[in-house]
Image (cartoon, rainbow, N blue to C red; front, side):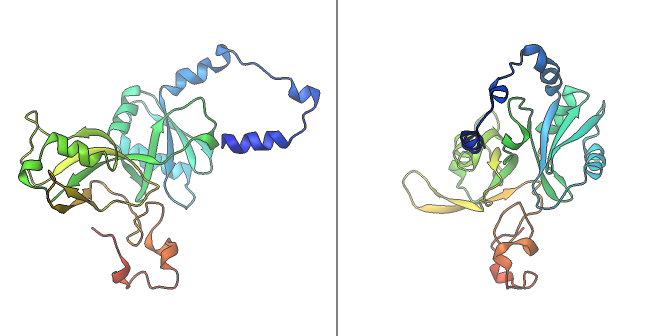
Length: 240
């Protein structure tokens, strides 16, 4: 976006009056910066238009904020959410991901330095389960190693001993949701043979079972053109 603006400006011819800059001091931004501490930016990962009033009612019921919450529409698909209590904001962020009408809700901290068009919304945390690992690999280090290949690891669910004797390992990972879901990874253990470790995602919203993207359902998938998305199960690379 910044590059596009620079290119646009380079083509403009400014008058003397237009070229005279306006300097804003800290007093001009103080009120917004103070209120921004209570805010998050929100986007619904969907091609469909969102009704802000329906969104507000739905998320109010889910979040149950102690001191209320306000929604402001910044762009057609981008919203600013202002909480009355910072503890409500922290709880909502910590309990992500959320969904609205089965579509993924993206949330991130308020960034006052950016215009709405400059804000990039593409990351969301998920708890991911890792299956089919040998017993000797069920450690904190293994969980971090696998999780880091999916995104930024925020937390691992491993006991203080560093070993987790359960059915699967589990990590909370901030993932790039513009990319396709990763179904698993080939793991090579101590120079031995490779094995397939498959993943399961907790609280997963709607996504395309054909291509693995969050942004649309099967009926809207460009790969579904000319095929029967309801019956052509052989083309479904993703599922429960």
